[in-house]
Image 1: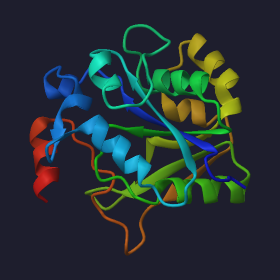
Image 2: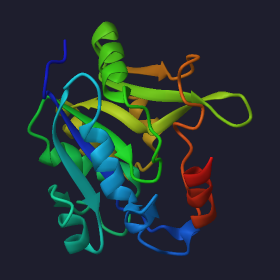
Image 3: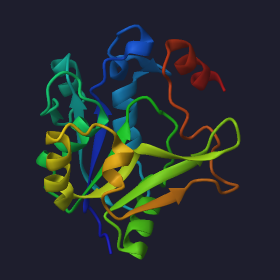
Length: 207
């Protein structure tokens, strides 16, 4: 069972933002608030009181991120190595039994994300709980950057990345992973829509 404050939440804001023209995605605004700060605030409002500390993974403009009031950690791996580099950084800094990862570019993620991932992980005695959602084509697909991980997986991830591994699904396949569908009638169908361009970000503001 996962208890109150057993989860450290990590905001993933360390990407290149290539499809946004190279801008620092976490500092782009959503309804007037920088995306990374919006994500932090949404994490602090998560149901169930499971989240203790919240951290940010970023690789540039660190002072701007630090101004949001949470610890900021750059990737341990060089050269913008992708989300798994953020996972590893979070696990290295995590002082609770569990780490939950959330990207900064998905501003409508569910308010009960932590509770539902934790319930599934505990029920299945899994190492990882990964969200899944119905996408615009109607298919339910995993959302690999929305994960709840046991902190003890750090050694496994370090070994995987040292061998050149960079794909989240290939690493999670090496561990006991449960998929958690967010497809109930009351679930927001836009909850896992991520903004890859500024136009997509603005469309999420207005939809």
